[in-house]
Picture 1 (cartoon, rainbow, N blue to C red):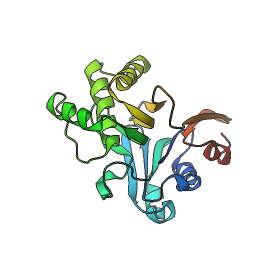
Picture 2: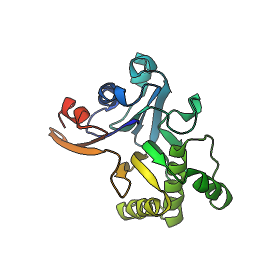
Picture 3: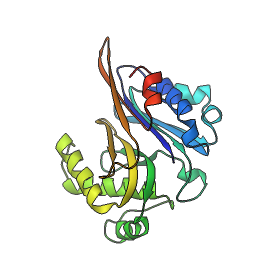
Length: 217
């Protein structure tokens, strides 16, 4: 299993994502990653090891923005190389980051279709990268110049049609926001919380409610 987190806030989320990963550390000890966005700019830090060892103060200072996602990894598919540390990123369409917990049972079949028909390059053996590219391909197929919630939900429904298995996902679309979804059977856990700050509503997704409780969501 892995741990995933997503936060949309009114203030920087770097420390909140880090703190959430520490309480989800039991879900994966092999690697950790955080990606944040500030306007249209993406910031990322990730590596192999425990949360406390992966992120330096310099790393944390570089993770700017009020929106972000994070991941701790226990590898159940793919390998242990640094290239498979999540979240993953593709630049088209719009710029999408994704963290995934679970397994796709038809990952090999999807990989072949993505390369042969969708003309997408896969850099790892991770089924998480497959899932990201399926979602990106479906969102690009819609083809609107600026993504709308309806576009995102349509692409998510296409993921449900194409991807088989048990999965929970947090995704960040640069400049637009954070998306969370589970497989149609809801096998892998994902919980949603919200809180009211002085500047407005804030939202959080996580694999376990303990992360929301710690951050008062």
